[in-house]
Image (cartoon, rainbow over all chains, first blue to last red; front, side):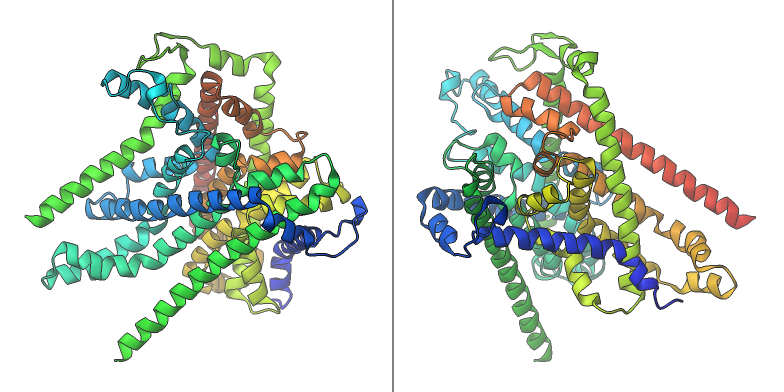
Length: 290
Length: 271
């Protein structure tokens, strides 16, 4: 067919791609303090230095890392168990999967509402505890929302991401189990052994990718920490937005420097992921050769 | 024996997980229709249609916003699916200059949080007069749905291959016709998956719409979130219920239309 065809086909994605890069680069340039529209023309690292030195930022960073790491690790582990449960009990399609898809369809904003109606001090869980005689009053129930422990946010992410991990890695694990896993069992391996030595390691690419997606997502996400977070410290994206809408427009580069750091950390996470997965591949190759 | 017990544990885990997914939704339904639900009752003491009535009261303008929000997200979804089909075909079937870069860029939005990108592009959009317009919001939504839709369409395009379409072409059909009558019906499941995926991503967006739309472009999420932020459980739940039901309705309609499309194509093929 025509030589021009591929260039016609990629026209829209190239246009959007250029816009995407333009927006990204523009944000990064602003983070160095260059915003001619606001009469800021010095190219400097000052904003980054000031942001990194400020305790507000460090608290936010710690909090955001904590939320995203804890929720993502727990989601990956529980999601893997859920995937295994779906595969080994023969629920790889049908109603169970529909329910899991339903969780993927619900936005984080509505998940925040779930958290509020279940986990707040007059929420359903507190009521249940009261009826069971575990607590005597609303105030005896631990604060889970709008506080520094961020349990409400983490549980919210779990509700969303555990089904996501299961949905994401289900087809790979199901196909591996059907072929290699069952072969190992036929050859005499116990089901537990065949799972931990065959099915799980071979399913790792999908599980790892799902983990990276939820880790970077929850690190840069706004909705849940905005709706359920404490007043101080705030999650990084929420803090960055506060700086962004600061009435003094000369505050803008601080917001952009925070965004730059969010970006940098996101990329470091992705970099570590690729390093770890690639080094595993190399090790695996050696193993095959020897 | 050991296998049996581990299987039972997995079953218990599965049912617990499914319960944990469904329980909050049931609670939301109760809240949406609760009139009074005082502490420490586990069920509402009286029910009413206040929440639903308030949502669909003519002065609330919720219904027009819901329709325009659905239209906006459907536009994003259709564009995203079309661009994904085109990009997938280019990457899978052709060699061209810059293929590697394009491949990377089409997935890059996954590695840039949408908050970071939205704040970066905002000034650009103000200069281009795209800020506070539906078009601006559609463009940003589109950028963030494409990694997912391109991924779906790429895998499918790869597995279907080009052979059958090429045969139609060799037998004298135009390239466009051989795509429309051969590949398109085969791609249909992926197209449905792409459209639903992009739709839900766009319909759920809150921050990006708030920033780029500047409060001028109202979507359903934009009017729902303030009630959740206030902790208003009755109205928040009523909105959430409308959100879920409208989404499921849209999905059913997309599915029916696409299936009908497929049937009609089959009829043509037989004639």
